[in-house]
Length: 177
Image (cartoon, rainbow, N blue to C red; front, side, top):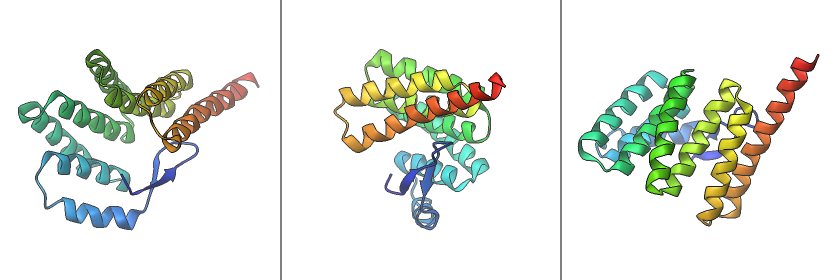
């Protein structure tokens, strides 16, 4: 999404232009399509409107189950998991993302698999599982390389790997004292 200006160096959460995100939310709320529902979830999430984001995410998952494709359902579940992550429900988010990864890899949907690995890595990072986060980001990097991602995408993923390694080193330093 064009609203992302970068990522927080410690949390890896998106840094966005909040006024542009809010303006887009006003526009997209009028739309009822499945893609508009997914966009609403993301916009609400980055604005910190987590209760509403969860409601819309749950509706998008139901909608995808009833009338969407399996890929639609995976996208909705990934977004749903990211809302749970932001709400601090790390175990629930990780379990949902793991199921999405298994299905994406079973179907050989590398792009969706990479996305799910990205988000599971972020969940694991937030939960303090730095080795797990690093493994997910490295798998994401491999998948993106296979897909022919551009240098900017690969650089972002490498930054995620480095963040997991740095946080791991910092946590071990704290326990060594």
